[in-house]
Image (cartoon, rainbow over all chains, first blue to last red):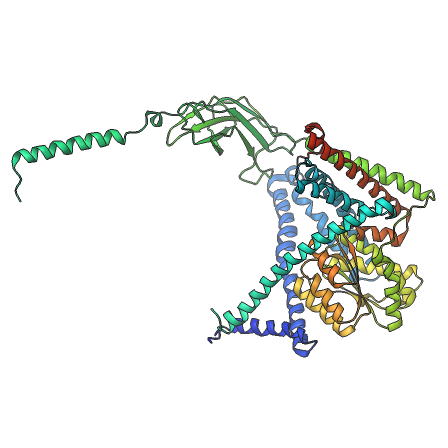
Length: 218
Length: 403
């Protein structure tokens, strides 16, 4: 056994054990690790966003626009709409900060409405393409092999299951039941696949504890 | 050892012939010493269905590509802004290919900037090892953007079709027509779950997962939250919402506030119960798990976008003895919810749930419109499979999208 001399490895190992102690139940050790994990990650996230979004995306782009304005004149500066457009995002962000002031906090709803409304519209097309048209395109297969027949029948019955405005009775209900069987078999396969990938994560942690930290395995 | 003179001459002669024959045997194929024939009919034109800043070049292959001397290795494409100007290499394609897309950047400050509406001339170089031959210079071509992407016509047709369905059924619903919606077990259980929490005097925990406010699953979840929050206001049961995303938190606060106002209990609304935790996946899980074990909520809702944290959350909720209702459109996580929670809304059921709970004409009409859309999909699917089986390529091409 050759424990690591690195203090960082020791902290990582002890915190890993702290999170694992949750398996025993809620306890002060877990509470400490949880508070540390949540606090550090929230702080880290704030700094990351500040330096990867606020500074380069907002200030950086507006800075370029101002520079163009000053060096190339009014016409060129104003036509640099790509960089100026970031001001719009900045204004929406500023409106969100108004939530801190109860009397005018309602203005932040404009930003929220913009984000939710525009993205819902934007994703409508994306979903229609990926979940609708591409699905049809990939399922249009010649019924010449067992695999193709299963794929077409499975998709057909799956779609029947997701009919909400018709009662699942009779032949329609039978097809919907076949559809849910297809879904459950798919979920079962997906479950097994994902569990195996989680096992690899556990192995990674075990390797950290017994290999990198404690030096018990090589 | 001393060799006699005759034997030495014989050895020298043998060595001479050896050199002579070996030189001949390793001589290059004559075709390798000649440059390949140049390509012909070089044509430059604007790349279709884009926003400009790109020109496509096509040509007829060299007669020495795959035939003749068969020594073409690559084609190099050169560009200049005048026929007499200096030609710059823009890229290359391997032998056998006869098109090249000169994709430039649209930003003026980018080194690879390719302006639209400016003429460019192209030349293609057929290259073998060290030898090459240049083509004639192409006629000028300029890039320009198109307003309409012809490859996306099926998308336009589908959008129009679905919009017509949705608007028609929304109009009918507004005129008072009642639409049947089949019951969803997970949603039927919502009222019971809230009632249970009230009886036990414990809070309800509502989790959006890791989704941001721009995701459809999160938006659907806001609608469900509105209904759940209204019920909790009526039953005077606290609702806790730890958030992963700050914008989701803001929208959730607005949603719950409006629901409490609608229920006539704005005094019951507590903004501090809807709070930001962290935006790091497993730190968020650790925090939510702690809340579950300490607050012991009677009911947990997991509705939104979930990833690897789904099973950890659901298992902890199960240990805490909560009734759990889950729903996500993240296919890989649905199995975990099915296994570990009491009720699961599978995929689109999550979207339908909001209409089912709200019973508003707009949502009901949209749901009915979606069902008609699905009917069109099923119909197309059957026809398409039959067309593919009998080789009717025309019908299959109707669904082909060029992205």
